[in-house]
Image (cartoon, rainbow, N blue to C red; front, side):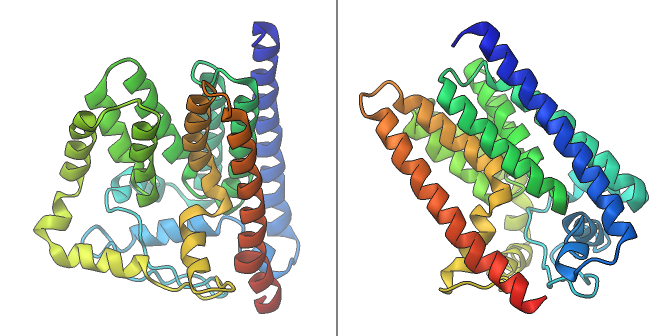
Length: 306
C-alpha cells in the first residue's frame, strides 16, 4: 500500500472517530434534555449504569442479580470476575463525570488501535473492513457505553506481543481480554492462521487458568456464572431459541474485537489464490447475518415492547 495513502486513511479514520465521539457527546445532552421514547432514553449509557450497579454487589456477590432502573431488562452479571477490579476505579467517580471519562478513554484507545493497525494489516481492503468494524462497534459501544473497546485493546496487545516473540506477555493480555468469554475465539484464530503451534498453548492456558482459580476453589461461584450465561433476558427475543444466545455472543457492538480476529484470518488467506473470494463470501454472510439478528432480536422487540 502506498505510504502516503496509507497514512491518510489512518488519520481520516481517527478524525472520523473524533467526530463520532462529539456526536455521541451531543446525543447524551439531547437525551437528558428532551422527552424521548423509552428505547432511546432508556438505552443511552444503560450498560455503563448497569456495570456501575454491578460493582455495588461487591466481589463475593459479583454474580447476584443487579437491580436495574425501571424499563431496563434484568441483567445478571456474566463477565468474568476480574472485571470488578478493572472497572472499579469508575465506581469512585460520579456517574455524570464517569460517562465522559469512559467516552474519552474509548476514543483514545480506539484511535491507538486505528493507528497501530497499519503495522499489522498489510492488505488495504482488509484494513478498510477492519476500520468499518471498529466504527460500527465504536458507535454502538459508545451509545450504550459498554467496554468492548477494552477487549480489542487487550487482543491487539496480545497479538503485537506475539509478533515480537513475547509469548508470556501475549498470553497475559489474552487472559485479560476474556472479561467476555467469547474472546477465547482468539486462540483458534491464532492456531488457524499458524501464528502459534499447539505446543504454544501453554503460554495462553496458564495465565487464563491462573485467573480462573477462584472458580476452581469456589465451584458455586462458577455455577452461578454459568447460570447467568444461560439467562434469558426479557426484551431480547428472536425467531428461534438460539437467537438470543447468539445475540449475546456476537451482537454488533462485539464487532470491535470479533472483527479484529476475522481480519487476522483474512490476512492469512491473502497468500492463497482464492483468499479474496473467501473473504467476499464471509463478509456477505456476515452482513446478512447481522441484518437478520439485529432485526429479529433487537429492532422488532424494541418496537413492539417499548
